[in-house]
Amino acid sequence: MTEAPGQFKQPSRKGKKAWRKNVDITAVQKGLETVRDEVIKGGVVAEKPSAELFTLDPTGDQHIQRAYNKVHKPLKADEILAQRSAVPAIDSRKRPASHSTTTTDGVLESSNKKRRSGYVSHKELERLTKLAHGGEHVYKDVVAFTDVPRYDPWAEENQNAAMQEMDAKYSFLEAKRPVKEPKTLKRAPVALAVDGKEISAVPKPKPEASYNPNSTDYFDAYMREGEKAVEEEKKRLRAAEEERDRLERAAKSGAEADAKEKDLLDDGNDESEWEGVESEVEASSRSVKRPERKTKAQRNKIARRKEAERKAALEAVLKKRAQQAAQVKAIARSIKGKERASSTAAVIAKEDDDQDQDETTVKLRKRRFGKAPIPQEMLELVLPDKLQDSLRLLKPEGNLLRDRFRSALLRGKIESRNRITQHRQARTTVTEKWTYKDWKLIA
Image 1: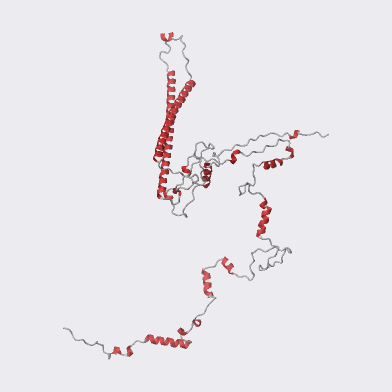
Image 2: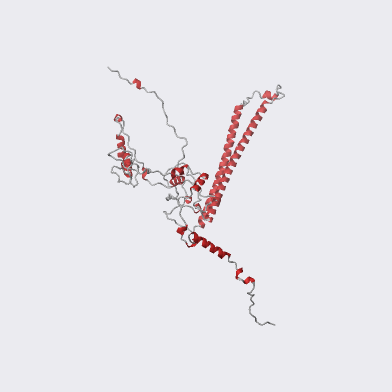
């Protein structure tokens, strides 16, 4: 059952809580008292402008500055710089010297005045300095920057001019013949390539030589160089093993020869129990001349000769085996090369002569200019843990001088020679001067 709608119930207004005297007006009274006090003192603060309320203090409180200086003592340099002098600072700019007077009264002229005409500029000073040291009139370079040399040492007129400067007291000597220019000086250098093609001065860089190379190229080169290093190490160990075996065989054969020599000496020193008794056979063979017994020196000589013959025979056998092994390897290489050539005969890429060639693909000829070998190319490969992903972290490696020197050798510019560690000393002869005997009798 629902009730009928009714009006909103409202509390009674006749209670004590509804009286006006019970309303709290403390905040309003305090605000009115504050405004009354401000009016008495000169005006309401909120209604005054900022210029009447605030002032600027450019000097500061001296008491606070002194208290701060007691705790934080300033440096002596700051104290000196903080001082201000009434005397102006010295002008450090250059001033032209006066031709009229060389002395002054101690008063510096202002730098704002016009410069005097006697001043020597820095550019003029440099020109005079160059002129004093020869300037442009001195030949500083033997060869100029042009194609035509400024001074030719092989020219006959230059050599004749040098000969004419000889002292007159040596004029009776035969004149020296001028040195002729070698014929090979005008010939083009011959490269060391088998096909005779010109090798580029700066070869094309390899893909794996980059500071951030491709993973495929890098790991291929890494495995290839690793296998090459392993093969070289195996070859070295094999050669060391053969040398050790040869020394062991030589020591063993020498010990056997010494043992045989000792046995022979022991057999000769043994005395028989029937030494004083002569048999019939010995009596019959006394008339036959027996060979003389060899001395110890002779037996040692024979043993050394036999040992040398044995070593020579052994070395000959080893050399023959090495030659046979080399021949087998050469035949295997030739067969493998023929198979590779036959398999790649369908794909032939003819490169231009002017195209840059890689030094590793250039095959060098055997007969070269000079007996010294060509130095090996430096390995341009780093370990995986040393690869850098930024040019800023990259460290310089290699030797540019060594690369340029090897490039000059491959291009035939210079001859390959070994380094001379012990230079030939000049021969000096000590003699006594006989000038005291060269005298003339004055009449």
